[in-house]
Length: 253
Image (tube, rainbow, N blue to C red; front, side, top):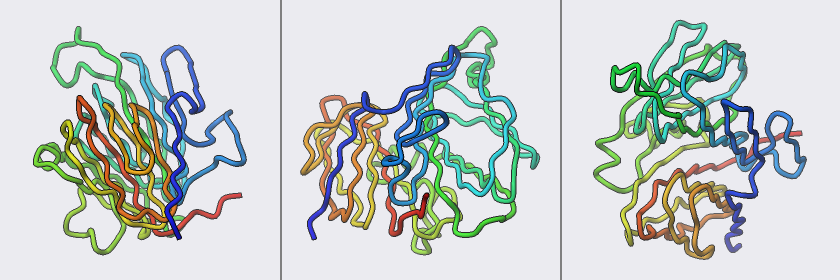
C-alpha cells in the first residue's frame, strides 16, 4: 500500500487570538471543533503558541496526557502542583505526565535568560499532547538540553516511549507506540523520515521540500499514513523540523 500524504498548510489551522495569546491549532482544540480533525495517530494536540511578555497560562488542570513542550524563541517558566519547576528555552526538551491529575502554570519570563528585567520578548513554543499507555499513573516531569546533539546534525530523539529508544532519547514518555524527533537541517541537506504507520511532520521554522509533497513553509505539516522513509531537503535558509513517529492510533470519539 502506497503512502498517503495529507499536507496541512499553516494558514489552514484553527486560530485563537486573545490579546496576550496568539495560538494556532493543528487539531480540534478548546472552542474549535471539527469531528473530522481530532487527532492523527496518537497525536491529539499540536499547538503553535506565541505568548506576550509577562503573561501566560495561569494554574490549570490536566489528566491522563503526555505533554511535550518545545520552545522556539524566548523562555517559558513551568511550575506544577507536584513541586516541579523549570525554565524551558530553545533546544531543551520538556515532558509533563499529567497522569492521575496535575495543576500547572506556564508563564513568559523571557528576561530570565539574560537576567535583565528590561529584556522582555514574546515566547514562541510548540506544545504537543499524546495519550499515555495507562490511565491514572503518577504525575511526572522531565527535561533535558539537546542543543549539542542538534548541532551535530541528523534526527535527534526528543521524547519516546519505544523500547528501542531507551538509550538515546532525551526524555521518556509513557506511550510505547510513539516517538518525537527533531532536526535542524542546513540548506540543501537531506534527511529521511521515519518508516511508520503514522508519521506527522511539522516545519517549525524555515522551509523544506518533501518527497511526494513538494515545498513546505513555516507552520506547514504533513500527515503521512504508511510512511516509507520519504526524503526531506532543507530550503534556502534551512529548517527546524519536528517529526512524530507512531505505530498505533488513538481511539477518539
